[in-house]
Image 1 (cartoon, rainbow, N blue to C red):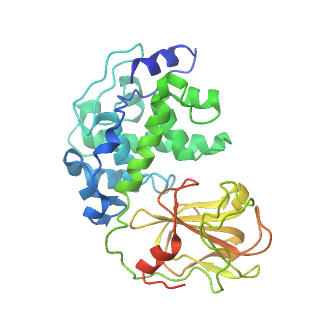
Image 2 (image 1 turned 90 degrees about the horizontal axis):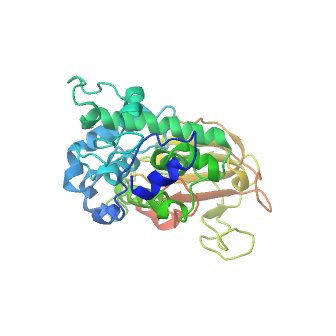
Length: 348
């Protein structure tokens, strides 16, 4: 962690930094074009810098190990965080601080490693936080604990963004600001840490420029199209429509557009009852304003499987299905669903 974050952390008594990051500002700029490779289990290994590719299977394994509790922690997200922390250098150390010295690929300090570290690869614990395989698995467990804490906090921001901020600056600062610390905090280091990691994860988890499988993909609901993508209007907070609508009555069966893992199934404030599914290319589909939900977080679904029924919950003017395709879980990461579904063999 840079001096500004260290100083800010020291200023709040009882809010210690749990894990100290190197914060390699601009590290995400080294990401190559995600269309250069194939996405496997949510990670496009060919998009990673060469130093990270040997660890790709461990980021996948780490993500799978917490998928039941924290399906939002994709392999691409964990890999992007590892790159931002250390540049995938398993032996690197940060500067000494009052909290300890951050070590290894995930930059654990000794006190935090004592809680989360364990022998994940069967080669012993002599290297401690400098054992990259052990550290990657510990990173996922620690991040999952942060995601769950974020979910319980009631703060409006995305739990993954909150967890990243907590990992970088300490959860105390997330509580202090009731969200991701603003850019004015610690010279913007935590703010940009979150921004860079989420942007890099979107690149490393997708292959939108490549060939996508059409197997198992289908129209999410039987009904005509309504409001188009990016239609403008004051009804939406962004000033435009972030998905497409299907004009269907309450109670119409809504189906998963393709196979994947449910990362959210519950109330989404203005979206009402919603389901979000992560697919094999790292892209997410969202089904909003549902009257009922028939799947749960962490559940694997097949394309065409019922996930709920259409409704009029949340911010609506009438019953319909709001459908989005996103490169991340957060609002604002939407892309046009129509050409994406067309690549999947689905014509609307």
